[in-house]
Amino acid sequence: MNSFLLASLLIAAFACTTPENSIESKPVTDQVIDKGPSDEIYMPTFKIYGELAPVNYLDGRPEESALTAAHGFMVLRVAGCEITGEIAETVSANNIKANEYMIKFYGENWKSEFENETGKKFSYPR
Image 1 (cartoon, helix red, strand yellow):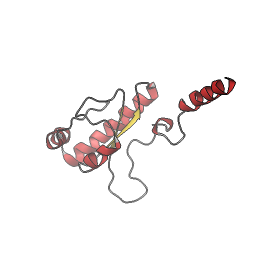
Image 2 (cartoon, rainbow, N blue to C red):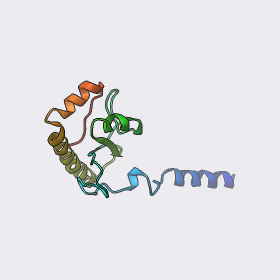
Image 3 (cartoon, rainbow, N blue to C red):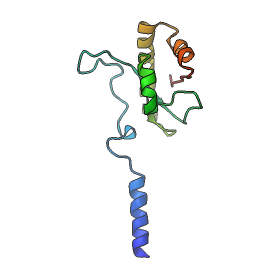
Image 4 (tube, rainbow, N blue to C red):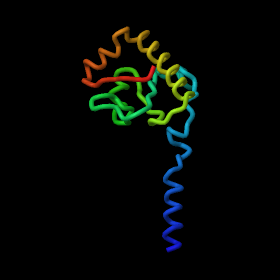
């Protein structure tokens, strides 16, 4: 009985911890827009958080990367429903800069053009 209780406590303790290399453990206080270590083309990353998106909305899943990359941007889920003010502010600043970049290179209607071409909707915190 004691070993069962001990095993249950260990499972609960380790199941609720976030691994050091997971998205949730990394701060979102990185630079808003940077070029990266090489001269490769920069691709802005829109950061999202909150509940899972409805059907036909981008949700930051890895399988969506090819679709968004083909249109010049990426989507990254940085948190679930529980966020801090710092995360919200950082995500907002990042997304404003990413949107400015997209407008500069793809025009004012980049988002609606993406949605029309792909049939996917895209909403992000501002």
